[in-house]
Image (cartoon, rainbow, N blue to C red; front, side, top):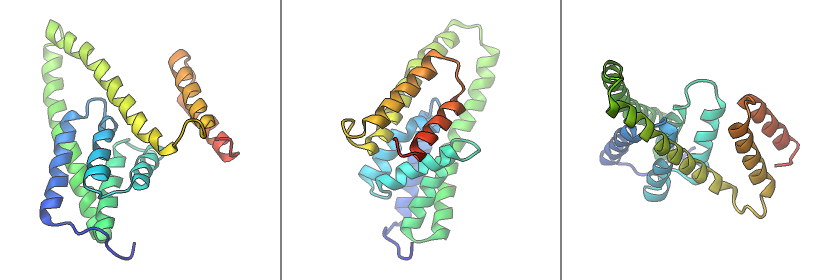
Length: 193
């Protein structure tokens, strides 16, 4: 990018950091479960990212080896690049990654120590069971946000059929996910989806 498209003041950077601090405490099931709110904030509300930049950040990070939280770094990088170049890109990475990791890491450490010491309590078992539907709902919301980029199910029906088939196979079989990813990649390579 040769020219900055965003004019971000220090207050904007502080808002970005604070928003990711808040999202960190909501990221039950991983940072990817907060992707719908990241989309709302970064794309719809602030217009710091475009839909293609948002979706590419998630797709690239999920395809790359390493922790799946890397999509947050790519979003921070894109915001910084849009605001003025590579140095601001690095600043965006720093803000978003520290924001998403610091609170949840601290809370997880403290809560895990407490839950391990009190694991037999009824409240701890109930909490764990109650969190499962919340995580599933957040993951479905993330899938919905990402699928909106593929338009109309009537025209993109092969992609939607592939998605439904993969979901059914994951749910009903013990087939390893890498086989499904490979099959999807081959179908995409041949232009079938």
